[in-house]
Image 1 (cartoon, rainbow, N blue to C red):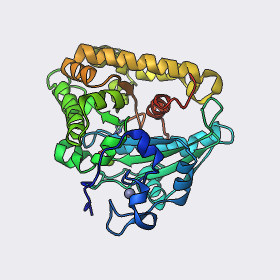
Image 2 (cartoon, protein in one colour):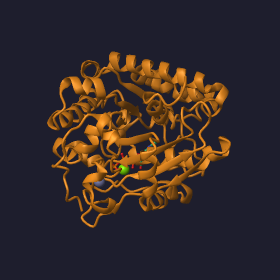
Image 3 (cartoon, rainbow, N blue to C red):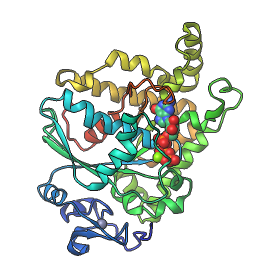
Length: 369
Ligand SMILES: Nc1nc2c(ncn2[C@@H]2O[C@H](COP(=O)(O)OP(=O)(O)OP(=O)(O)O)[C@@H](O)[C@H]2O)c(=O)[nH]1
Ligand SMILES: [Mg+2]
Ligand SMILES: [Zn+2]
């Protein structure tokens, strides 16, 4: 399936790309496509949704949710619970808000891979090894603290296997070059060796610093290989590093003493991440309400700084690398499933699932805080 490798791509300044109306599938100019059909991902071609073209022409802001990370680190679960939140929960919380799917791939993806499995209590499979056809959503009637009342979301679930190999990643260099705020998902737990967690956490410590550094290193190499300079990268790129599966840090909650013990042990390893549950409970629902959202977002920034300090204390190679390569970087710690997904009690309890979106929106100055 993955025939076209974007090798004809020329790097253009972002402003030009915005001006020249781009294709949401390959991020090339629409004018390079015949009859508004993109053949860069599939030979059979994918039609560019007319609504997308119209909205971009009207300068509706486009937010890219470009999710990258190693296999099994929780990308698909993150997107599933994120989609669940914005399509099932938010319409009930934000007055007047609604969404539309702009292409058939979004309907199919929601039903087969993302929201359908949550509602049916099934598990999603590992993501196929092809450059993903993005899902495109239009969110309308956003609350009044948003700069505009609508945005377009273009979401890519990048296959984890690609992140094992820089050359695979390069096949999608158009996405890497053009999307400035990638969401880099990482599961500290799986890097530490998830199988033996939590009992062997001390004895069998994996090299988290190496894994995390390598992922960011490969990301930067793809940008260099695509022609960006150190300066371009520093100026333009602001990744959002998202630590996943943080519910795992607080397992065995039924036993209070054990919880205290775990809390101490994990706090030592994961610092502020171990506090996520308590943090969430104290801040529950703040993000949803106009009155308290500013406060939530300020706390979210403070939390990001706390995690950054934790990375500095714990993963120094990664910390030095990112602080030299990027002018800025955000950190999030979240739990998509809110608990071990094997426990099928039907409840969806994601924690801080909207934080990456809010960082994207803040990075584009689309919300006042
Ligand atoms: N406890 C817990 N487990 C999670 C969470 N997110 C993901 N998992 C588990 O991790 C497994 C892998 O998650 P996926 O989202 O499929 O991982 P992926 O990154 O999409 O993997 P590839 O598609 O292979 O690249 C899932 O089957 C879940 O069991 C979470 O927030 N909490
Ligand atoms: Mg996946
Ligand atoms: Zn295209």
